[in-house]
Amino acid sequence: MSGDTPTGDQPKTYITLTEPRRSWLIHCTDAWGNLGICMVEVDNGSIAIYAPDGSEGFTLGANGIAEFRAAYAEAIEVAEADLRARAAAAS
Image (cartoon, rainbow, N blue to C red; front, side):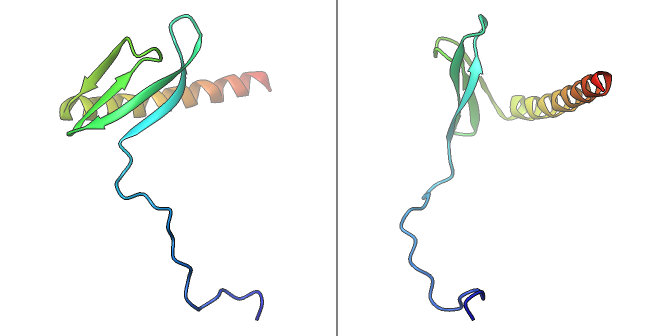
């Protein structure tokens, strides 16, 4: 039937990632509100985060990564609560 999922051979995929992604570019703003690109990079078990112009950055090791993950998750929850409160106040 034309609407059924085909059961035959699937075409070979040529475009694939051979390794996990190790860097990300993220739109962000600098201290003056100018749009820029921040970079997050993984290297040998550490995470480095670079400012938009590349002049500043910091690197986190295993403990710092764990602390940053916990702090970021909590900050997201607080930001969500702020946005819910703002939406409730506007209605």
